[in-house]
Amino acid sequence: MLFSAPGRAAIGAGGARLLTRGMRAGSYPRGGRVHLRLWAAERLVAAFNVASVAGTPLAPRYARWLGCTVGDHVALHALPPVTGLAEFGAGSSIEPEADVAGWWLDGDVLHVGSVRVGPEARVGTRSVLMPGAEVGAGAEIAPGCCVTGPVPALEYWHGSPARPADGDAAGTVQDWPAPEHRTSRRWGLAYLLSLPALQTLPLLAAAPAGITLFVLLRHTTSYGRAVELLLLLSVPAAALTYACYAGLLGAAIRLLGCVLAPGLHPGRGKTAWAAWLTYRLMDAARTQLFPIYASLLTPVWLRLLGARVGRRVEASTVLGLPGLMTLDDGAFLADDTLVAPFEVRGGWLRLGEAHVGRRALVGNSGIVGPGRRLPENSLVGVLSDTPAEAAPGSSWIGRPGLTISRVVEPTDTIRTYEPPRRLVWARVAVELCRLLPLPVVAGLGDVTTVALQEVLNRAGLAVAALAAGPVVLVSGVLALLTTTAAKWLLVGRFRRGRHPLWSSFVWRNELYDVFVEELAMPWLGQALLGTPFFAWWLRTLGPGSGVACGASPTGSPRPTSSAWMTAPASTAAWSSRPTSSTTA
Image: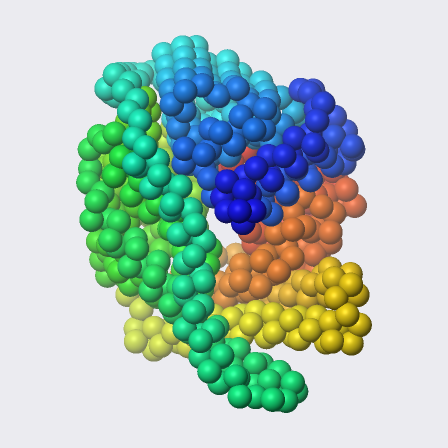
């Protein structure tokens, strides 16, 4: 029961309530008692993977356990604040990846505040509600906004910082039908049963390798021989598990895509459940299967998932509903792009196809929403949105997107869109090395297990339990240092400059990213987020940082040796914090 989603949510909520007891809105010293309690509460919630309940009927209940005020029929697809300082009105909708944590760091000051979302209001995906933000009843916040104060009822706001929309966009609130909240015990049960099914997927993927190891080791009588065979077989076992996991994820996403169709659907039903589960599986894929992203395999993978993908498409860690994606020849999707997400409001779910045209580019964390089309040779900048209407060759930046002039420089297409066969094979050779972190991860896990087993055999259970923490910590440090060594061996010191896509530098940089995502962050980096120890590790990768620098990004870091952070700089959830509407 403790390992089930309700059990983990209860433990996370109970621990967070104890850690944040008596915490009130206000400004506090960075690194002080309140900051430490807040950090510990969020790390506790992350450790128990409470985020898995987001978007399910269990999410509003978890918010109430934290102390939040939650009305009926709330669609909560993002985690509520651990402080409990939030109010979600009846029928309100919070879309995936919205930041409603209600705190932020400004230099040496931690600002904590409440957030309020009125009845039937909508907060779009990847929006931020800063401390003290209030969204009025029936109001709508566009995706990617930053709300810093009150939003009047029934208004549509967009931009960062958010402001009232004008012109045609002002009528977006009226585009939705009247609220209609349906309850379905059958589909509520489907959400709750999906949570243990998601937990079971990795176990099913590991089953063939586990059975093979059992068959090969069951007749081994020597402990030393068993350890030797385990270390020898760990690499093929890890590869087999990886392949099985990819197959299970791909099959599930492809089957779910058969249910998804453009249009309006009930917010609780078969289509809504399939959209939620697809989004969860896509997020798991880009994390657990990171080596195949930003590679030659990515377009193949997206096709297997149901997306329509042309030739020479370059895609990184794209997220969305693949069955509703169309990527034309030469399209480019940078890190963390969101294509064809779902939208929710008033008990309804909206789906729509998203189209990225020939040789069009979507920058890091850019959004191509449902029903949006980016024409050929167009550009959407970093942290920017695709407009409702765009001309071929146009460039857009910010939220809402503002058109900017772009001078097209003559480029060598051999290094961009039309690489010769020798460059293709050179890239294949480098990308095959992305498998290297997998045996390192497997070997490090085996060595850690063997070390703990040895302590158990020699000193007993009590000593082994006490030694478990230090042994795992040492393994984590080794993972961080191995990643540091990979960085300096593969790319050395980063320097300012431009590199074509089909170049050794780009391929080696992506290879280094695999070490970060597959080795460093899972073993120890994720646990160190927000602590001085994380900044210490960053220094080994090259970026300069002051003595009071702390880093807590929303995603895994990709530090360069040319970056410099001075005390008391902070990068708390940098990808979702306010940005100018005219810059990215």
